[in-house]
Length: 336
Image (cartoon, rainbow, N blue to C red; front, side, top):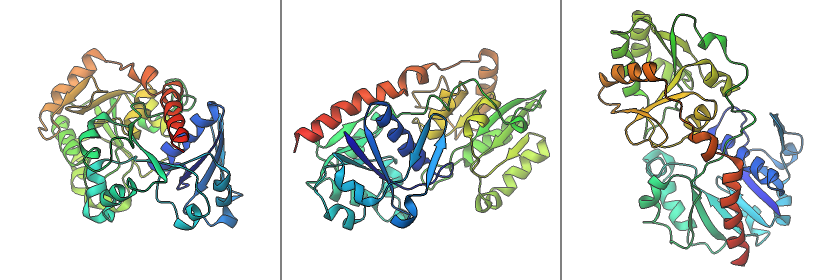
């Protein structure tokens, strides 16, 4: 088949793009032809833009090629003009969390998703985490809602062996990474406070941060300053390229997430340990992130036992993802 992907083009800058890119890569490995169109780049600029990392080169296509596709995967909003030209069936990909879609400053995309589910062109609306089913089934018809319980990663890039960032592998210390994007519905405030508490009792740990832009760097400066005072602040980074090198450098990631977000998925694929909030079924070491004193116990537990979660080797694979998408594509095409 020829499968169209409509997303934003932002290599190393946007989790939505990285997820879209990995899904396009999986389609190619399954034998399909991919058309990838960027909603943020004018057509005349799209032809010369490409992303070549690992074993996969993704070239942007002209939006006219969407007319020739068998199926269109919409990762974000698709201009009406593009869709008005054809009757290609659409699979809407819900990358986000329901609460994130519902938050006031997101333009009420929760309501938009509900309206899209009524559109006859949208044949399926897929999501990746079973935990969100009770939310989505309240606003989306059951015949259109489809779970892909195996979000896919790039096994060639995200693997245990390879280069790492030396500034995150400080000798004589146990290195921990916090790399979740700071959002309205979930943030690292409690995790940082837990790190401060742990630093008062452990003098051989370093906490490294990624995804901290200038705005949040200023906002969290008091807390980062406290870690610096206690001698446990490692590197402080905005978005960085080649995140796989960061995961390989550290001993463990600490996250407030309860699902396999991009950072959780990628960390596990690189063989990185994971300490998470209670309820994350992909983590062997969990604690209530609002109880900051518990992080000391969980760090000690991790360091003593070094649990290595092997779920990534069987769960987040291209083959697993393609098995599920093969069924979905078949249902979409048979629906006419």
